[in-house]
Each structure stands twice: as C-alpha cells, then as structure tokens.
Length: 366
Image (cartoon, rainbow, N blue to C red):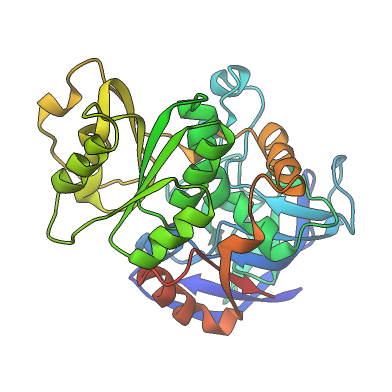
C-alpha cells in the first residue's frame, strides 16, 4: 500500500514523499495514522546520518494485524509508544520497560527487536527505517504490537497522540521518577510541551509550590494555566540561570526547591536544576540533552541527587491508562496542550513554530 510520509535525509533536511508499506507479519500491526505530535527530537532526527521516516508521537486506527496479535484488532483506536519492550530481558523483568536491552529505540544504526520487518517499509524501492521504530509522520505505519495501547473513545486523536512522548516524558518524570510528594516545592525550567507536563505531574502529586522558569512571558502564562503557582521570567543574558536560581531561592526561604527539572533542550542548562535544588534535593534533566557539557562539582553539594530520566520511566500498560483516567476526571489537561494543528505538507511551518516557542504542542492531522 502507498502512504504519504515525511522523510529525513540524515543531513538536516526532509522531504514529503510516497513510501510503500506492506501488510503486517507475525506480531506486527498496520496502523492508519490520524494525528502525530511534533517534538524537538523530530527536528534532531533530520541529522541522524541516514534516511528515516520521521515522527515518534502518534495515534490512529488499527487497519490490519499480523498472526499472533491478540491485544488489538482492526478498528481499535490506539496511541503509539516508542519504548517497545521485549518483556523478558533484565530491565523489563525489573519493571523498567523503557530501558529494554533488546529494543534500541532511537538513532542507533543496528536493527533491533523493536523494528517491524525490514522490507515492511520501502522508499524508492529500498528498505527505510522508521524513527524510534514507529515513524508516525506517515499516513500508514507498520509497528510491533507492543508499541500500541488502546485509547478511550472520547479522547480526540490530536490529544491522544501527544501522550506518546511529550506528556509521558514530563508527567512521568514528576510522577514516576521524582515521585513528587504532597506539600513539596518544585521548579520547572522551560515551559514547552514537556515542561508543562512536569508542572501537571507536580500538581497532581500535590506539590504546594510550583515555580515555572522561562524566557517567554507567554510560556509562563501557559504554565500558570497548567498549575504553576509562581513564575520567574529569565533573562537571555543569564546564561547559567544563576540569577533565576536566586529568585527561586527567594521564593523558598533561601533554601531552594525539593525538585528542580530542566526541560529546555539547551545544553548549557543541563545542570541548571542543581542551582535551584536545596541541599538533599533532586535535580532532573528531562529534555534528553546528548551534548558534552561541563559542570562545577560544588553544584552537587550537599547530598543532592541528579537524574536524567528516560521517557518518564514509562510502562505503557500502567501509565497510559492512568493518564487517560486523569484526563477524563479533568485533572490532567490534554486538549489545551495542542496549540495548533497542521497538515503533513505544513511540517516545515510546524517545526519552525516549535523552534520559535510559539506552541505548547503542534500536531499534524492526517
């Protein structure tokens, strides 16, 4: 079957082109995509040194299933997750599906268990990998059944698709990794899609003080709508956020917060949470910075913990139903996160709006 897809060339550019997608083999599912979220990682994937079908946030409808698939059927509404667990390795057995030793999820070159069969997706007659094994910026995607979780009928596809990465990463970092406690204090650096969901996770955890930090006043206004109790408008000249950290400490009796999260993707700010965390507190670098950076070691004093969570320690069968339940209760916002929708042909504009900070989340609608 022919599908329309966004293809990254590995050299910083992309094209919209036709691909050929085959029927699923054993354990695989063909999904007709309805919506795909736009994330900073999608922009990064343009330069992953080889052609890829782009996208790693998505929701759609099951079109066809392969032999042995039991937990979804044609017609089911599903959200995709890019951490595709094998279910039997050491990490999976320890309850950390996101760290699966058999499924390589991101920009590694070798194929792994998380992939559908190599000839399942062809571009110009040759096999092409899908970003994060799912490649959601495509009208059809062929994935392993473990990549799918059913979504309730009342959740719009545009809202459901962003649960697959941005919502899960932010919410899970607060709820699963930091385990934000009732009455605690939290700082969130960067109030884009991931940061806003850290704010939501902290609010649901019962944090008494949630301080949002950003260089955009509009982003801080959004953060208040999602649960921030205080805001700090950072100066662009404050390169290491030391001035912003001083304001955070003023708001916490000079002590600093219990939990500080970075969600900017700016390498220079990777260790900024440690400037804002109290002694014995926790700093979390949530945005997945991969660049080499240096840090003054005294920032770790005294008894501070520094963590780089992956995907909010996601276990799809545990976390996605919980997120949809919180959404149904009105305790976690999804619809309000989607600032603007686009067609696939408008992907360049969507990426530009994301990089400029104009959206909380942009979503491509098929």
